[in-house]
Length: 322
Image 1 (tube, rainbow, N blue to C red):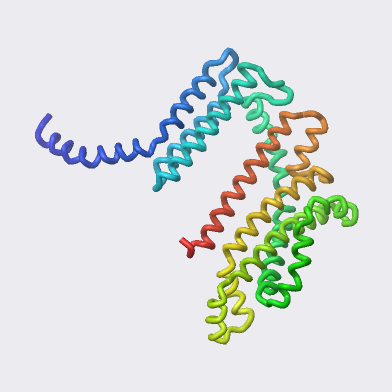
Image 2: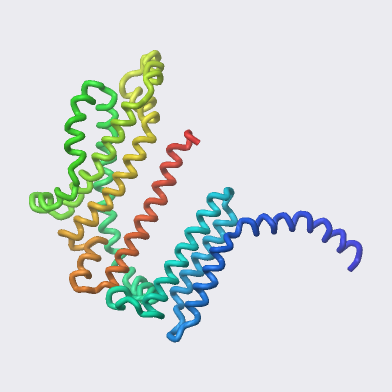
């Protein structure tokens, strides 16, 4: 090796070694050990190799590893590794209990390979149901957002209106929205109108109540300082009250979204002819439990995806708190 090559190596080594050390510290060892064990179990089988399950587990490993390496905090890296480890344990236990040891009835709880195969085959139908469900969800939840926030700002800002509305809010806001489903389906002209109404009722009260709470708890000093500037009521509500009560409003909107998913699924299971809830209810009546599991997994993925984006939106709206 000539002197020029040695000098280059001596120049690269001080930079390369710390980078390798930092990358190694970011790796979650338990995650990789569990991945190797689960992958080995999936490959070592008296039956056919569980290719779809192995592909899914490998995809989780790749995504978790990349996210762990790219994370800037130890908390985020640890959380990512822990989540991946839990998923590996789940798939490994599921495969062992259903396919290897056959502890569960395959008609009730099929193995992961069968569920993944059916999940892919049923994707056109589930996506069609998703379009129907999202139309109802966006209509009811969006209508609740558009009405509950302005009403909450107005009622919360005016003390007389606030004290007059609170008894009715405590009464109506505590009634489970699911009780309205039979009446909505019976009295309203279509299932779409009934579903939107039920979702609206379920989402309205959490948003309205949290908006009231947020407005009521705005420090009086902020309101008095704004009044010194002779701001009119619309400007006061939009420029002062709304930003100050936004954390409480976001909390209410998150709760309302959970209620909206619950009401949507219940309404579709009771009186729907399409949608994600109807998909589960329809196949459960025929004891087709593999498709029921597919529907449950699909709903879980949809809810997780929507929640992911709403959390990002909330962080953007509340970025001034960081």
